[in-house]
Image (cartoon, rainbow, N blue to C red; front, side):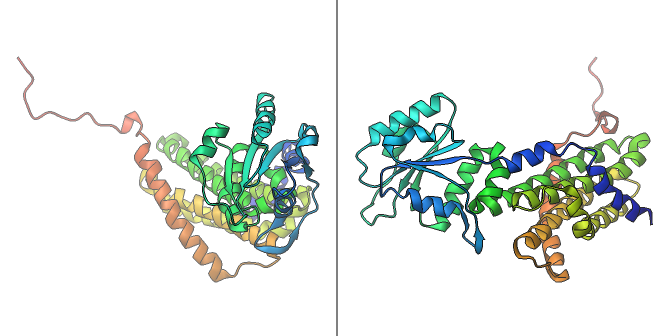
Length: 344
């Protein structure tokens, strides 16, 4: 009975943390500017940003600044500036000058060579040398696969502070950012359990750490659910998530209780399965919730089981890597005995 009481308290404990910075990140209206000559693909890319390529009904109407070179100053207040260049663009030098100005004032500037023209035949080392920057894309702006596989991950890497806002306002980024958020939270929870497993090697700390880790991880999963909801455009009120997902979080909670049983009385021996369960439980919770957010459908028991088995196997690999790289405390080390007599 105490398990479910603790579980109910998890969501109420969320309000103890100031959620305003998270909400502020999500609600911030990220400003994207697309700068280029007519025919460079500006409008096509704008429409691609507003769509989830795998979900036709996921479309936003987020404003985007679309401007030519003569009105490029309209992009000055944007958070992300993308220069679009067609195959036969005659204005490379002018675009380079604009890019340099924006770089100098700290703007996030990306260069996108649009290759959907049939006359395009070659890329690339010359292009990189011309721009002397890593933020260069060469590909078709109308190809969703290219955008998801190349454009989105690289842009995400350079604007981590804008992830929640990008996903909330531009569906193209939604699933990739959600998956990264789930992966990062799962890995962080696994790392946390690794740290408590080391602490458990000290007998006096074993019991309180074992109890505390379940509360910490469950709370972490609750924040994951909340962030994913903000990412896909759902409510900003944490209270709206309580009844909807307490069962999902409860599943993760019970998995962690099973992990405690695996640990037993020798924490060092049980560290790997416990870390793996922490990773897998968080990973499954994230994907079950994300599936519901995106489709309105719950995952079947069989799908949950398969997802858990896959993520548990991945969690074991991560756990073994943690354990092998973590030095054992001094009181576990033994000084090797020499079989040779000491020198006279």
